[in-house]
Image (cartoon, rainbow, N blue to C red; front, side, top):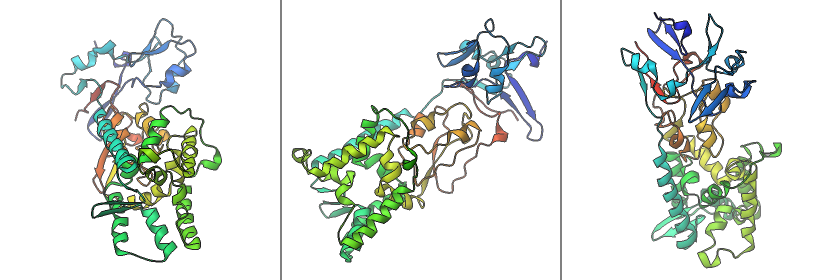
Length: 386
């Protein structure tokens, strides 16, 4: 005899779609049911959220707190119960005649970190230690590379346009059109320093005065206008990126009073990760403007997204652009590519393949609130029957 009402999972038939969906415990990394349980009957061990039926007083607070609606109440005994994946051997998977249910370990793209580290380290070594020049104006043989912010300041300050300078100045802008702010996430030498220092920094949040991401565009505008007024580059002397690159090798790395700007910028990490990049960097601002035309984008929360419970992408994003509130509501957050530094940490850490890189215009299936029952469980995936 089958009694669906006594089951730890709930199935919903959507006749208009011809599909059946199942709702079950997502075994959240930070389970809300655990936080509200007044008798500590809920615990999380070995990635499983367990309910101790002997300690449970059937108050129903876990049912009210769970955004998935996973804890269920037996209609006859009123006892609260929830799926515990049968301690690693789900009976529903074995019993499913159409094999619509599968049980498998979650996977992620952790390999992405290794090429990112290699590229970041190589860029730092070349720009700061080896090559003669700076990222403001770097020459390698016949090839020239000019910081676009320094390029703009030089034009308005000197009121002179040199063709070769234009060519070297648009090189990084072309990169931004292709790959967005990839320079910030993969090539910027100061970005590598921020990533390393940020691992050990305590965080206390930003004061209200440091809350607007639009400030960096004001810094960009002020740098250009100021250069036009005084006749030379006004931001470059205090640019942390250029300051690092102007060290001209190891011997001179700790020389020069201008290096004082680096600890000041690093101290901003106490507020939030990559605060300099988020709020003040005019180089990131100009790349952000160009990235509005970029050819690729990052999307989160498509078909495989484990909504409501998995906040991994939001936790690892160094610039804080993944909206946790939308994820909790089961809505795919729109990633502002003008703020995304294309580090791909969200893709790297997502265990469900929901964070992806897509070409502009490529169709992506969104995740909406009305699709609330289509999320896979913590260590399982489910294909709806049709």
